[in-house]
Image (cartoon, rainbow, N blue to C red; front, side):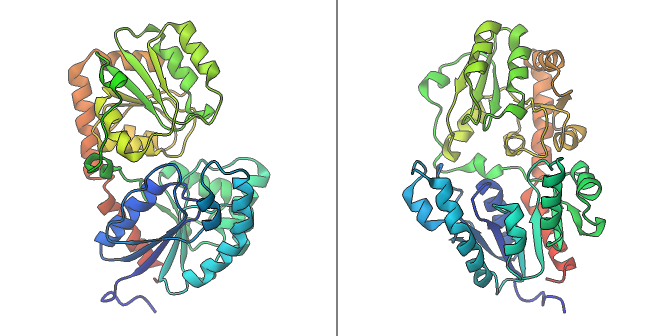
Length: 375
């Protein structure tokens, strides 16, 4: 029997390790605006303030003892592992009254396939590039067989789910990632640090966690021939950055590193200042940085990989081949030198953020899928 539409649908979103708070909170707020009764089950985000609750509830039910010890506590990973199984078992009681349980992440996929609470229907969103190794594919397949619906952000990702992981087509649903427009209206927005605010001339921004697959080395090579412009590489390193700093010195390019985690109140300052946002990834399924740039209506240059292609084909980004420093440099130089081209690309990005990639549109599609599942 389907859900009585006169009663708000009870939706629980789960992200035990708080891997993607901006996404979790944006989706929860949009579902609440659409009339759902929404609760987010997660853990305390330790890297900075999380987005504020807007019409939904947050239950920091996971890893409480470890969170109290703080981000720098010794043995933090082992502490989380010790709490993981009891917390997953406790989630069985927390999810019992929901109409639908929607997992945004699972922490230990190989184990969690056996620990998922029995509540149905349950859905899962794939936020990461799908694996290729035989063992990892088998692990993903075991997890996704326990789901009634698997959400993915792109058509290319949906094909990979069907063909590589073996998820039945009827359980695969393409729902885009939303633009992070909440960042454009933060009441506690902070200005740029003085040394950045004083920079004159055009700025190209590369933002987000620094990882090898993001092609930052390719970007620095691409910037070698670009004059009268500064490249800002901003984000917490998840790789050694000394080789990148040395590459920048050898290239002679004007490159500035801000190697730290940037909290939500600081993010708008960087995006408002940027003349172009660049995503030079070698591979990716999706990136929150792309949807932040869309929300701020910024001209975007991105590699033609994963979900970037969908945005580029819709007119919201200029695409270049991944790993091609010459093509990337040429496109950046073109945009830096053409005010009208930057304006047009930025306006297209803002239009996509307000329509195709609006959270209200995404919430409507998500609720329709929940109802198809019998929630």
